[in-house]
Each structure stands twice: as C-alpha cells, then as structure tokens.
Image (tube, rainbow, N blue to C red; front, side, top):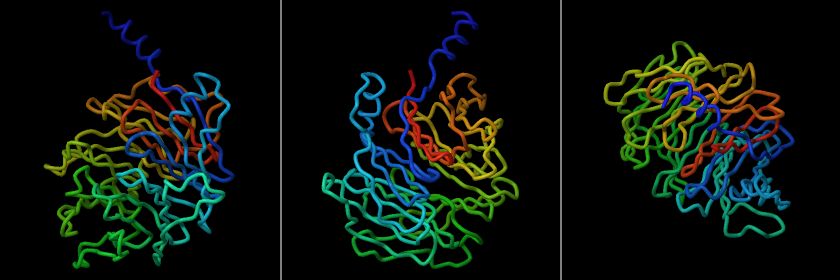
Length: 334
C-alpha cells in the first residue's frame, strides 16, 4: 500500500453534504438525539426544527419527496441559542435569549401545533444546556457567571455554595461527562472549570485556557480522560484532565468572529472545526493534530457565512453544521 494510494483514499472517502434545512434567520445551534434518529436546530428566527435523520439520508439517495423536517416549534420570543434531547429521547429542551428553557414532549408530535409541557424562567440569557445521563437534572450556562443545575421535576436550581468558585464572566458552554460524575464549563473570562457532578464543587480551573480569549465550547471525551475546548484565539485544544495540561493544539481553522462550538467525530478519531475565511468545515486527526486535507468536502454551493456549531451523530459518520447563512447542513461520510 503506497503513500500516494492512501492519499487518494482520503480524498475519495470524505464527508459530503447530503441535506440542508433553512431558517429565516441565522442558525445558532444543532444537536442529535442520543439514538441518532433525530436532530434539532435552533435559530435567531426564534424557531426550532426537528429533523428525521433517516429521511435526510433517503432524500439524497432515493430522491424522496417527503420533508425530513418533522416539526417546527415556535414558542420562544427571542433567538434560540441551545437545544438538547433527554437520554430517553422523548423530550426536547430549548434555551433562548429570552431567558426561558422550554420542554417539549416528542410523543405528542403530529398535532396542529406543538406546545411546550414545561418552562423554566431564568433571569439571564440562556447560552447552553446539557442533560445529566439520568435525565433528572439539566445543566445550564447563562450570561451570568454562575453555573446552574436544575432538578427537572421540581425546577429547583442548585449552584456551588462557594462564590470564589464562580466564573467572573458569562458561561458560554456546559457539558456533562458520559457518566455524569463530572461536568465542565467554558466562560468569557477565558477559563475552563471542572465540577464534581454530585456536590457541584469546582475541582479544577484552567485559567487563560485560550490565552486572553473567551472560551466558547467544552466537550468531554467518552473515556473521561480528555477535554476538547474551542476559543476565540482560533485554536481548538485537547486537554489531559489528569495532568491539567494541553496535549494537542489544532490550528489552521478560524472562528474568532462569532465563536464556534467544535466537536469530536462520532468515533472521536477526528476533531471537527471551521474556517470562517472559506465558510467550510475542517477536520484534524485527533491524535496527531494534523489537518486532514480533503476529509471534509465543501458543499456546492458552499455555506455563505461562518459556521456557529458542529453537532456530531452519536452512532454514524454524520454531523450537522449550524451557520450564519440561515441553514443547517447534514454531512455524511462516504
């Protein structure tokens, strides 16, 4: 097997766009359900779209005429900034700049208009939400420096009792580990914090994680050993959680204008980011940090504006890009 043959294989085997959905405003966020059957996108137009992944694939491969958009939810009064599925994939939760978090029961789809079954009203703009694996708790990051943990059933809000552990600026992103024992938060103050999932005590702080730049995203690897972070310094970093040190910096992308929520690929073999200059997705080999030329093929026509978030399917080689050009595109490895 020659090196040139391997290079050609990489160019042929790549991510290609196979479906896109449009909003009436910039698309800020996207997420997949935990079984990979559905995806959801949220937009500045205040709407959320629920997408059928199987239908997205079939629409391209078999020229299906059915619309993969199963439902459009419109209950927020301001832009939708974050979306999440509970671990049973029966509830969809949305957060907005209007300071509310809304819960939708997916078993009631098909009615004339889908209504939320519950609303949590916060006093600040909602930036990020993530479910605990038990689906009993919801982690919330807002424009306030305090990370919130809500009991879903009672809507009781918990936070660290030690004010010295708080961030000093807004919390841009929050993420649980797969077992719920640890969660992470990223802030505009430039720091990343790790928290005990039971006591909500801060167990580690990575100050100036991206120099003086804001940190927009954190993801914890499935083996709990690593953390992926993305900052306004145009660098994505992989951290060793045991040592509290950066192992690899993924450079060559750009996302400083709007910020980016980057991601691992479904098998964590690649890190997926963006390039604002060309409005395209880019990828790096997770272990080596080398940019994978040709792995992510640009769409035709390409995105007309920067990518805001990359959401990865949990079980297949697919991901969504949510962008400023009012679209979300589904890419599949083929």
